[in-house]
Length: 453
Image (cartoon, rainbow, N blue to C red; front, side, top):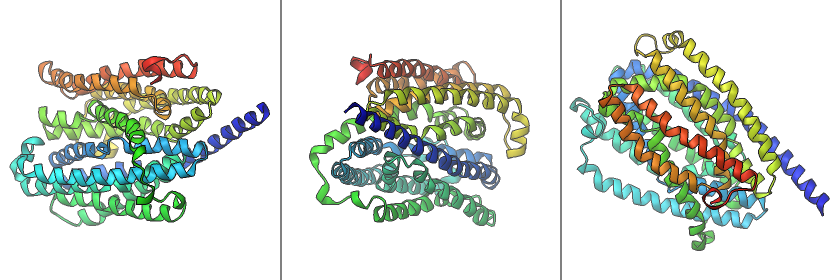
């Protein structure tokens, strides 16, 4: 019996290792393409829209991005439940989870569309985004376009949860890479030929193409690889709703709070310092976040691999790979420091003299990104186990602090952009400490109470 168990553990180790290696290579290539295209497009958009309108675009796009997490966490819930079902060899249960999730998310999408239609005419979008009236027509239609397409994409994007759950994260990112390339080409071919700096054209390029690509992705994979779990009304089982939403709602609350902590800066800066400062912040963030993004790419396959290993009680594998990820992180620190050293040359090469940046702000930005990256191995492991109650409570408390703290630093202390970044650092440190402690407790079988919930 013990020999059989040992063979199972070894086989699981080998399979996870292969999945991580193949996905890591694929992700580096695909995300590399995505990152390159997203960085190429920045100076083109700034040149086309000007610094002020680019700030408007970034502010609106970052706020609308909040909507993608209004699936009440069902995407991440499905990811974990599907990975666990496959790990224990229950394809029937996997199909029930898939069908039930698609059913729920379709209802949620319909409800959100009705809600948006009901409130749209009662909101002054110019005040909401601190934008002058000169962009009225573009702004109103841009809001409709972005909100509408983001909501419609909810069911279509669930295919990514299945790919992640099947430890095929590289495939999950393939359409993102294709979408970014298509967006870049359309910007170059269409916008550069059009003398009108129209925000609506940019919105169409960034929303319609990805929507079509995700539709294709669903049709393709449910005709081939996921044919055995294709969602149908027959396999929707309401008794599993609580199972899915129990974990899903936790992820949803966690995601919303995390967005408030880590992704609200553009909106805060737009309201307190203006749209030009939004552009300055965004350009700095995109440059200095390169090492952090690379680390996130390498981490992506580990979430579902941790789920698989934890389901099979392969703690040795978990410990070994957590140590490996922390070694990689040390290299991320070195690259981040080099970006600060050569920042003036890199900004000049990338965006020229269109956007002014501050070296001290860059140092604070790199410090924040290093602290954020250092906690990611622990967060990925904890998310993979589904024991996220502590993380949820912590995020709920910290999210209440982040925005008022940022505004205080910006307006009362006069720290400008640095105020937002310093507030983020203060709000991230508790995550690093407590997620590290929880990880140690879980892998050493000492987690009880909230540490194990």
